[in-house]
Image (cartoon, rainbow, N blue to C red; front, side, top):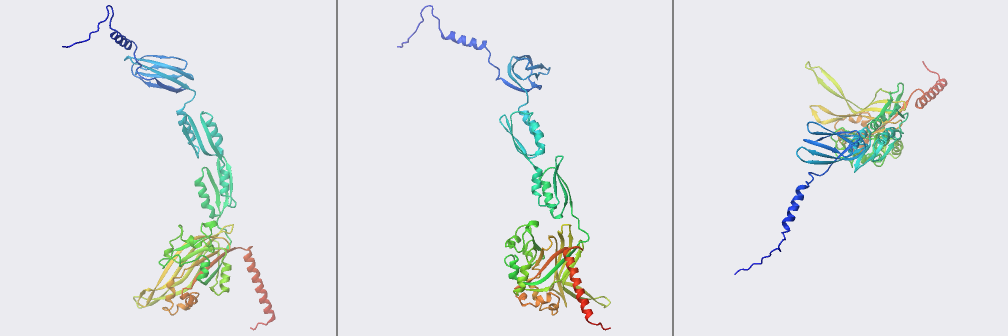
Length: 502
């Protein structure tokens, strides 16, 4: 048996739910939804913008004074920004859809202004624009000559934060080059002009400035060699105790072992060549730094020093040094001075006809110097050295070989500075002393090879070259003339006191 509850409406009453459902459907049909979200169109005054919209039926603009429109046959809508302001635009399309737009007309471009500003500022070196929201931040340094033009450009744009500072390029360049004599730095027509006659040693510095800075006009002239000047070179060839050479900064034992090549290393004055003085405590470490020749291939050393005279004199007084020779060389600026310490080894050859010919080969130490001097008495010297030894490892019958090593370089010297050359003779050179009976009789090298200290490797050969510049009016020349006059007077007095015998 089943039971059910039945509810009946009173007479005259109708169901409510169907009625509400019908009302809702009616309202949904009667009021269409928006076809899409509102679109924004931003323009600047006077701009023409084309919108790609198909099949436009009708257009309505809220404020025609702000923007006007034109419909093209292809369905394109042309908008013209007539005045600064904001308005709305409603479109009816032929397919029944509708679209709404918000139009804003600015006095200038916003984002496009940033791109335009970046393009204009790209001609200035040293500044960088950054976009932060609607704000353009510009920072960096600019040449002071460009600052006024830079400021005029920024006046055309709003929302710009100027953090740019002006640089005085002329003052910077003048400060960097202040130690170059006869150099003038001026600002002319937007260019930093360098003029004057400078020494050749400063040319690399000028080249660096030209690479670093824009708008540098280099009108400098390099000193040519001065004709008429003579270079007088005092040469001392000495056997020095290795303890003395170590005081000069030459410590071979801590730097290398063996000898396989002729490469020579230059340690020079830091104020001009970036190295160090020989009598500086840091010289030995400088020799191992990049920029020099590999020290493992040589024991030869070239260096420039300014205070070695006292060391030499002290070594002579203490018996730590012996002067083997003290030649004096002279040559004109642009000429060549040659020095040879050694001898010539005879080599006999026999022709096919049985005729004996003798050819002499030089051995020993040969020094060639080709100096140039400018009007500031800077000496630029091309130096060639050659070291030749008897080589018994290359014997051919009764003949011995000659081992020759040579090198060449360019060095800058001031008047009175001393060029030091040490370690030019191999450790094994003294071993040949007993093998060639006449080797001990050769000039300069003979006494060196006969030295027991040299054979025991307690001393070494060191060559000092000190250049001086002189002309007719120089102190050196005047001193020589005075000395010649004194000798002449002394000779005349002797002659007057004695009768010459025919």
